[in-house]
Each structure stands twice: as C-alpha cells, then as structure tokens.
Image (cartoon, rainbow over all chains, first blue to last red; front, top):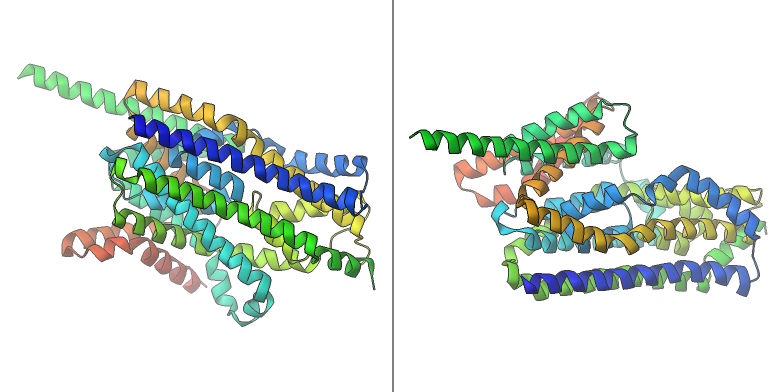
Length: 227
Length: 235
C-alpha cells in the first residue's frame, strides 16, 4: 500500500514539473518573437484573437468532469501525458484503454494505471514518428497513397471504439448491457449540453451498475437465508 | 519576395527549430520518466513482460489511424506556418483543427489570413501567441486540479469498495458513448463500429474454442482491418 502511495506521489511530482516547463516554453517563444525580434503585434491584437479562441474552445479549459473521467479510466500518469500531448479522445484514451483491457478485474488499479501509461507513451512515440516523417516527406507520401485507402482510414476510429467496447464487454456482460442502455438514453437527452453528456452517461452508468449489483447481492443473501 | 515568403524564412529559421526541439524533447522526457517510474513499481502489482508487450501493441494500433489523419491536416499547416511550429504544436496539446483555427484567429486580428501573401512576420507572431496562450490554458486545470481530484476519486472508491465496478462502468459508458456518437453520423461509421465490435467478439470466441492465444492478441487489429475493408466495399 505504501509503495503504491509513493508511485502516485512521484507521478504527480513529475507531472506538475513537466507541465510547468511546457508553459515556460510556450511563453518563451512568444516573448522571443515579440521582444527580441521586435515583432510584437500589440497586446490588444493578441487579446482580441485570444478571446475569439476562448469563445470557441474555452469551455474545455476548466473541465473537471473530463479529468475525473480520465482518472477513472487511465490514471494520473496517462492523464498528464495526454494533457501535454493533446488528442486525448481520439488517440490517447483509446491507446490507454486498449492497453489495459486485458487486465483482470481483481488485479487492481495500479497495474491498470501503469499499463495505461505504457499505452499512452507508445502512442506518443508513434505519433511523433509520423510527425517527423510529415515534416520530411509529407507531400510526396500523400501523392503516392491511393485515394481509396485514404478514405478507409477515416473509419479506423469508429471500428476501434466498437472493438474496445467488445473487449470490455467480456469482463462483465451485464455491466456492458446496462451501460449501453444508459448511454443510448443520455445521448438523446438534448437538454444536457453536449460537452457534459459523456460525463453524465458515465456517472449514470456507474450509479446504475452499483445499484443493480447491490440488489443482486441482496437477493442472493435472501435466498441463502431461506435455506 | 512577398511578406509571406519572408515570414516563412523566419518560421523555418533556427529560433523556431530550437523551440520545436525543446518542445518535442519535453514530451519525450515526460514519457520516459513515467515509463521509468512505472517500471520501478511494476513488480508491486505484478506487471509481466507479456502485459507490457500487449500495451505497446495496443498503443501502436490505436494511434495509427488518427496519426495519419493529423498528417493530412499537418501538410496544410506546414505550407503556411513552416515545419518547426507545425511540428511542435502538433506534438503538444490541441488538435490539428484547433491549431489551424488559433493561427487563423491571430492572423485575422492583424488584418490578414495565414494563407495570404501579406501574412507578415508580425501577423505570424500574433498566430504564435494565440496558439500558445490557448495551449497554456488547456494545461492549467490539469496542473492545478489533477492531484486533488486523484485523491478525491481514490477516497470515494476506497469507501464504497466498488473501485473496479466503477472503472469498468466508466470505460463501458464512455466507449458506448463514442460508438453511439459515431454510429449516429452515417451508415459507414455505423458499419465500422459494428464490425469492430463483432470482430472482437468472434475472434475471442474462436480463440477460446481453438485455444489459439495469438488470435486473442491480434483480435483488435484484425477486427479494425475487417471493418475498414467492409466499409470501403460500401458503394
């Protein structure tokens, strides 16, 4: 137990240091262009443009529900890496979950978190490898790939989601059916803002499955009492 | 030489490359330190070599498709913003669509756009500011809140003794949601998701029947391949 505590301590320590360094780098290049090269566009220009971006994506900036979701699904190490590298929902989360889909239920949280971190780190290496190729030979590669293949690539993500859902469904079919039912319901509740709908579905599914499990356990107890 | 060509000289210059190398270096450093920490504690929770091998494979397979789509958007960005900024920004927080719109927003505020001939170095600086400020905002809440939230969720799952059921329900609900969300778009997405699902169920079943363990290992990749082939056959 103590070892576990120490593992998570170290993850948070390094997670916070690396994110802080990233912020320094991001600011550094801006300040360099503005004041060393004297290309400063003016604060009002930056502010106007920044507000424009804040209006479109700002609602994701303090999204605690997403963070709880990520913590539950892949643990803090994978979440820090996903935050720094972006593309969480389409790339990091699937990588993390596919990595720990094989972990048995009784094996516990820390093993799952460590394997999720391996999955996300691999995803980062693969992605960066592609980006470096992109910088070196991008145009040429796009010209030689057949267009039919490019179209097919768009459907890898939905297929992946279906496949991972199937992997998890093997662990407990009842939980899978209940969760999918709840998802279908919540998905069609249009009064919930769309960025909160996944989280609502997750919380509702957790509650429903706990309630169902407890009532099943109680029924079992009762029938054992009768004998 | 147009203003945009001058801008591209700056954008492909040494300062931008240094920024790019530092940023990607930081991403690698973080991944390395987490992997190392994980390995040190792996014995505590019985992580086997096979587990690690599976993780590496799963991470690779799940990344290939989206990485290639980013590749396509990235090409457009390189033409306008130069290689190092594109490479750096696509390696860190924010997806390709965000980077493109943030760069455009900066250009717009200086009265131009990222693909026009009068995209000056000052306009480029505005783009860099907006892309990076937005990126910083995306990091802040994790920087400050992830640790307390981690304590909180751990305390809750301890108290209820339902940690594993919570994790499983959360996984199934979020993937169920993604599936429904894609399936709702059009028939091809629906077919892809269904084949992906059925593929894994069938391969797992066959693997249990024939005792061929490798079939289970490759179920994810084979199912996705099957789904992509079937979707491409839809007229």
